Length: 141
Image (cartoon, rainbow, N blue to C red; front, side, top):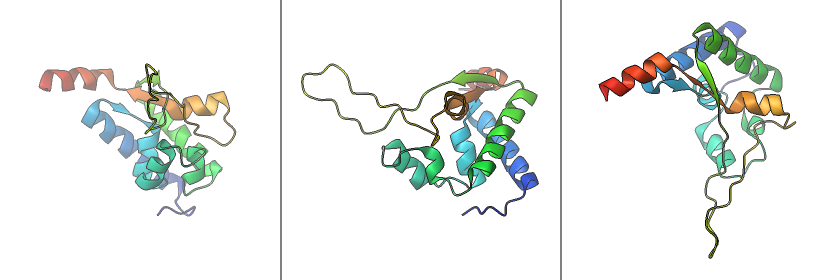
């Protein structure tokens, strides 16, 4: 488990490593996966949040908001430095059942932050695309 003792330099290096590996593997990186790679979000806690059992993602992370904000800033810095294209997405709750007679499953948008502020929610929900790597992966596969 990560502690608040993690130095800023350690965080910077872990964020860069995570972003690089995600882009190499699949052509894009996500802040949520960075949080897991850095060690401040356990996969089981992420899944609890995805199934709607936690009100917001920040609440299940193991560091304070100042550290989370620093990590998110480093994600953005890496993305800009490496010309990754931001692509805003949104996270839907998993496990929503379709009711009889209704055409589609209900969609519940998940919340990342306690405040729910638009710019914070957008930052967490943005995926960063490495378009050159995506093209390369397509020609390989």
